[in-house]
Length: 279
Length: 184
Image 1 (cartoon, rainbow over the protein chains, first blue to last red):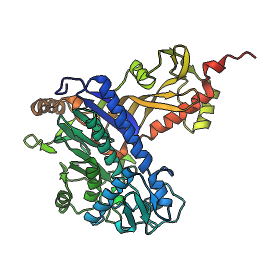
Image 2: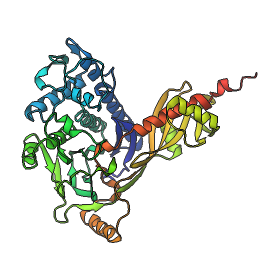
Image 3: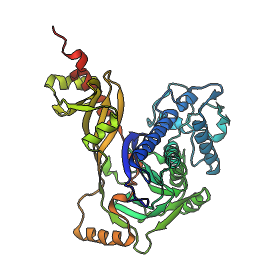
Image 4: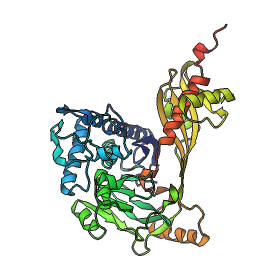
């Protein structure tokens, strides 16, 4: 039961390349369902705009563009956050590594000339006008999913929901009731603590071939193996900071993440060396 | 944002299996076809030949012969197909429902049941006891905690393939009632 006395409504749909689960409480059921449907629609919109896999998305158009093009305000917003984080994290988070991901077969080939990686300076973004100064391929992997979660949360709040969780395959954000942070580890599922009005994301690198390529998002930093869980106020930030953590030396990572606005949750046991059992 | 680590008790293990039921058949039907007034069960029994055709069209194997299908109608007018399906991933078992328009467009997808089986399912009995004691102390309810398992391994590719398969099934084995019983 939620504090307001209404039962939460919970829905799950495929989206953002994973399963998105929304749970909401604090309004009559029909209003909750309407709010959840709107939140799912926002998430679908983010996916349409920012998926590398869709040639007609803003990202697809950007990666084929030669001159300045007009992009959706949402895409501009996420790109601005991504570029700023690239600068503040010394490019440990880098949205211009699409070329490298394509070269490694992680992302589909856009059939246009490209360079493997670049820098935030390679993108000029003024308002909703964007121009690539070098043929980098932009990918918002590692930030757009979190931002979609933030959109959904904002939508639920604006619909009067008082208690909600939006969880996109392990990147989640909640408000209202405190939620328990659970992690998968080699030893099983572990509960770390309770989070109130915040976001949490986990990324793994190198554990198996299907895992999210955190090391690639971070560009050419040394590849490390492990799993990083970050909490932050916003899901986009938590999501992106896991990539920063993956690309930062163990002893520096907590401080680096803290400076960038997140908190790295220490692994319970030291990260195990790779287990290739899942391949 | 407020974070309260479980310090005193140290991080504790919780069951790796989570089952979530989102919809019963009736609820999913209503969610996917809100204006429909009735759902006519019309399960499809597929011949081997049809199953091969489906596989050819979709590149996905149709593993079973029978597919649960309902016809959604509003006051006698055909609205589309409601199909239930299941996919089995590496770590999850999913039951879901798809709404297809008479023309074969996907109108909506809802996950009905999601069962996640992460890691080693078999746990020691004493371990379970430990868990139960600690949950009551920390005051959280089992159903309310969050699945926070490294996101990337949960791929919805299985569902995407499942829907592709159902679209092929519609082409092969479903005919809209209006055009179905033309003589000759």
